[in-house]
Amino acid sequence: MDVFEFIISIVGMVLFFITIWVLLLRKGRRREHIAPQGKYELSELATIAESLQERIDILESILDAEVPDWREQNEGHASQESGE
Image 1: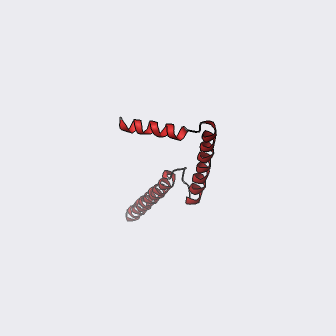
Image 2 (image 1 turned 45 degrees about the vertical axis):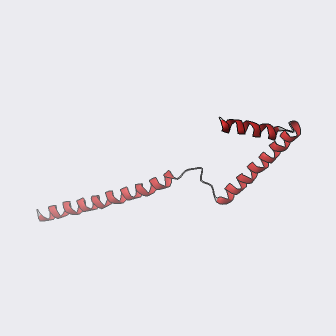
Image 3 (image 1 turned 60 degrees about the vertical axis):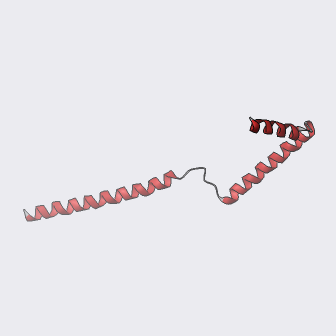
């Protein structure tokens, strides 16, 4: 019976270590999946910001051509809203 008990204890220890190993691998994979897919590098964000600034400039130039006093009208509404 000593050999049988020895084999059982070895199998139990191996299963224990395999379980720990699998759990640690799962934990590492979870960290990778938690990262957002919308992750950008600084250079990409700078490019996006420049593109948005160009769009704003274009929209402002269109508004300047169509409604010359839109800035004054907008400032009037902004001051009225803040005064309420």
